[in-house]
Amino acid sequence: MHSSPLTPVVTALRLGLHVLVTALAAVVVVRALLPGAPHPAVVAGVGIGFVVVYFAGAANSGRYGTLLWSTALTVLWLVLVALSADAIYLAFGLFFLYLHLLPRPVNFLAVAAATAVAVAGFGMHRGWSVAGVIGPVLGASVAVGIAVGYRMLFRESVERERLIAELLRTRASLAEQERTAGKLAERERLAQEIHDTVAQGLSSIQLLLHAAEQAAPDHPALPQIRLARATAAEDLAETRRLITELAPVALEGQSLAQALDRVCRRAATPGLATQLIIEGRPERLPMPIEAALVRIAQSAVSNVVRHAGAARMRLTLTYAEAEVLLDIVDDGVGISSRVLRQPPPGSFGLAAMRSRVEQQGGAMTVESEPGHTAVTVSFPVPARSGGDAPADSPESPASGHAIAPRHHTF
Image 1 (cartoon, rainbow, N blue to C red):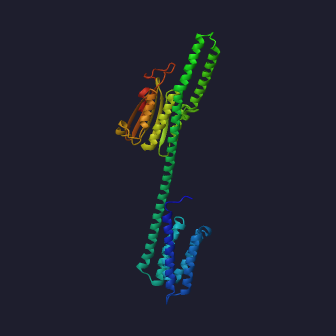
Image 2 (cartoon, rainbow, N blue to C red):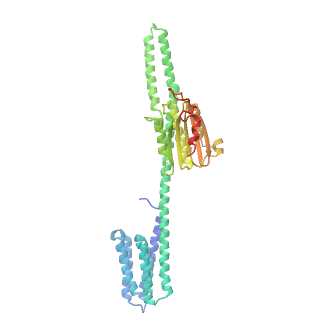
Image 3 (cartoon, helix red, strand yellow):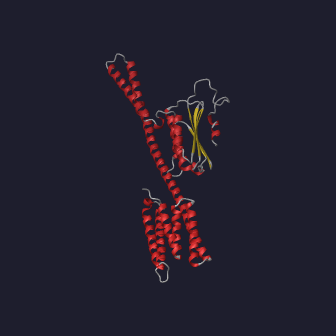
């Protein structure tokens, strides 16, 4: 069972209350046995019974019920107050029990009633005086103040536990995202290496064998050449299937927009609102470009979640006539110009994104100041067919870098 940080405090308060009630009851019993005290046997018996009921209820309050326990103690205390003026001191222990056991506002009413009884009991036995009024009232005020302070401390502890649990969940989620990003990056690297080496080599072998087959149709080794070409074609097809399997998981069975939407939704928290905007007419892009866009979005969004302290973040994917653009904008603390010029050792997020963009022949810009950071990447793509207006014409949908500033502010 989870232990609250306030467990030692609660234990100390409970022990202190036990000691307080026992000491006050002992004072009542001992003074009742002194020579000249009224009703010594009855007061001593009721006082001992008060202590027995108190500890029985403290050990088994869940079994007997808090209402029955507090009622029994109240009845015994009223008997003691009627018999001895010293019994009013036990009211201080009852104050804490009422405040802890009874619901609001019944607990405060019970404390007020017990205070009135204590004042009346003192006046009945020893005459009315200012001290007889101030004492119980002051004791009740102290008990109420301690109880209210404890409740505030308890609420703060619960809130702190909630924040710690949320922080641990966030840290675990970020660690899992980083591990996943590492695996995906390695898969992508292997796919690219296989594509650039094995696949290209098999394709070249197939072309050379086909050329040899065309150049010498009567060559005695023609069947072996055809078999070698067929084998190379089969291996090339298998290699391409392997490359497809190693493609980024974030794009498997999804469009680029769906993959980016998933990145946005995963980053959304109660403290961070995310939004994805798609502009232009979506089209299928080359796999390396789509993979690069997803990776860059994941890296930029991860930086926002971990470092920006932002309340809002927006991703805008724009399909222009000759390029595709991705803007990641947030209202966080920003990136210092020093970090933009020279990233500190061990910090390679922006550098890795820039390197990935350059590998695909794209461009990347970063605008940052407190309250506004915008990362914009663009990749050239073949112009779409059809009668659409040119990318820079007024009739064209928002295109090129001209659209980016519209979504650089919230």
